[in-house]
Length: 219
Image (tube, rainbow, N blue to C red; front, side, top):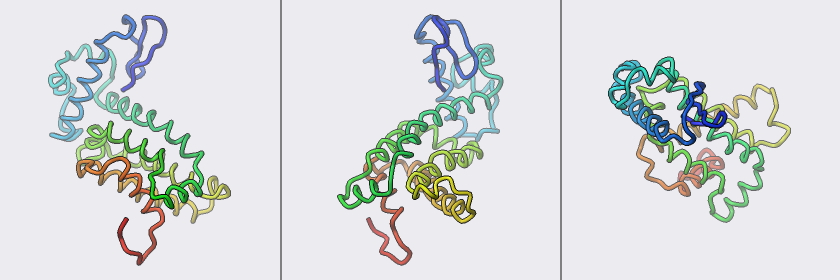
């Protein structure tokens, strides 16, 4: 959940501006407490298994404070999801500048593509939230959103320019196929504890893009 300056002495949580002193530490503490509480309760009970009261009790905040900023727990979850997606926007821009020859060059050198390393660093930093929201008790809408924005964007960036904006049905299926596969890779990495480093995962992602049917399944 982002906290942004609206004007001098005013900040915003989600879509709700509130008057506070600049860089008020109370906002950061409340944000962190609500995020941790939401993650813990989604992991324990699932999104439908707790109330705003449960959330506030776990976060150590009163309900009035919560409702000053959010309509309900879905609004809090949406704000947290939007923050993660906003953080991915920079990667989308970098990936749009990629060309297949960049990938081939790093692959030939057996080096991970830097933007992929940065991406997995970011996903690791958001790992606790992603584990909860992509899990069985999370938000079923978020996986497809992540697939389209991140994984689909990565695949489009590596296509020849004549295909990137193509409306051809097969191109659409091609992108959907690989985007779904890469979401599966990210999901598995997160759910198995993120043991591999970001550099290792970048190499995995690169290798999977080029592996062919019948080829030995090894790095």
